[in-house]
Amino acid sequence: MNRYLALAQKNDGGFSAGYKILRGWLPEYPEITGYTIPTLLRMGETERAKRAADWLVKIQNPDGSFPDYAWKNTYVFDAGQILLGLIEIYRYSGDEQYKSAAEKVAKWLIGQQDNDGAFVRHTYGGKPRTYHSRAGWALVLAGKTFDEKEFLDAGVKNTEWVISQQQKNGMFRFSGFATDKDTVLHTLAYTIRGILETGLLLKKEKYTQAAVTSIEKLAEIHFKYGILPGYFNDQWEPTSKSKCITGLAQTAILFLKAYQITKQTKYLAAGIDTIEYLEKVAMVRKGKLAGALPGSVPIWGRYQPFMYPTWAVKFYLDAKMLLDEVVENTDDVDAEYTAGRFAGLKDTFLKHSTLNPDDPRVKNLKDYADVFHQKVVVDLGCGTGRYAPLFKEFGAKKIVGIDPTGEFITFAAEKYGNIAEFRTGSATKIPLENNSVDIVVAIESLQHAEDINSALREISRVLRRGGLLIIIDRDPVSIRGILKPLLEKMGKWMYPAWAEKKEKWYTLEEWKKHLSVGGFLLEDVRKIKMDPWIKDRMLLIVARKR
Image (tube, rainbow, N blue to C red):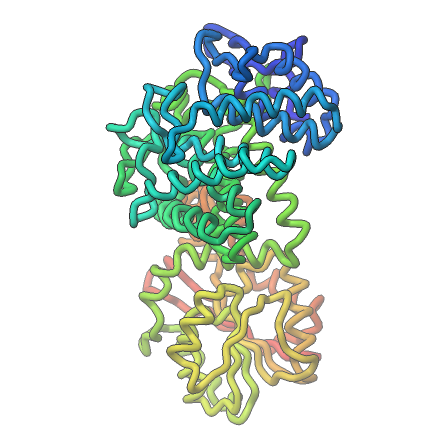
């Protein structure tokens, strides 16, 4: 159980809105209490979930609505989030009191809905908001759970209205707290999540595709900036330098769900990047608030300044549990993550899809041209396939490019498919038969392998006895190698500064040990100067399978 979330729950079962610097713990918030119930149930904290639900039943208004944070008004959005929690506790327990409370709030919601599907009454500022899609989602879930067509139809009607507000660029109108200003990532993520979940419940591609269209734009911005900004205008341009931490936690969920739907690795990478940012950069690690997340980074940022909102932790925990589910159902998460990072930054790599004949790597490889004649060659980590023409020039009989990034494989097949075959795979999962290859060339690819010994054993598996492994990887004994840790911390590298994964550069002595474990005999070594000042230097290693 997250320590902060445990502290946030009061004795009567309700959850505090959060912890405010100089004020301490804030009063209980019915909305937050409602949508924290599903999180608690997924964590196995059933008693806490029941206490929260019992408190909600106790404070429900006679008309089915619930009080807001200030206990003065009633809001559609708050009611929708509480409905989600009441449905989940009923589905878990079968207790009729939760069903009764859920049906009452669903009927109240329908009573506030306009003919076009929007909610205007009992809304923030008395305006329609597309983030009410989460209320639409709750109504659809209620309709399916309680077999009530009225609830289902109302939820669908709201979802249709929300989608009608989506612009061609994927942004939603009325998705912020004020219709005439920019949008905070928090409420934008609310909007997208609502239509996504409704689409998944109803198996309606129109809704899921609308959500993925917006998630695609978020992923594009993620890879451009490293982490998403907190606010956007209607053209997706950042309007604030601060980060909205709750919005990031919500967006991590969107990225991971998009990965589950599309299997595009860039979404997995973006999701992992975001969760690691929350853990390594934002989360409080020590003291009485250990496990808390701030409203913004920096703490004085635009969204909930100087506060640790309970809902930020709730969405982080949801994201973390979803990632665990994804990991459990993915064969090689490390390879998928690496592929996703390359896919997200593909435009940078596509600019270098043709070899420069003056590249020192090319010049050194030409000295080994004779060994390629009439051989079956694998380009492991082929990227855009740019080395295929060179191996063809060397006289290779067959060339197979292997890369985990599907976008690169598609590009390579289109550009070089007439001279080589391209397949999706990784250093630890090469899609070829045992003893079927004469030469494996790995150029700046093994530095991305999480387990170098496993990768070398897999390479040995596909190589025939006596087959060659040619490695070109970065030499840590160089100016760039010395500066690598600093550059990584500055975020000027392949992976984010806070990422768990780092490129692994090996010294020659380390390569000798790994090759021996992998079943290879070292035959030749060269140090390739990429520039006159050894700012960047490569190791070229030739080894033969024993």
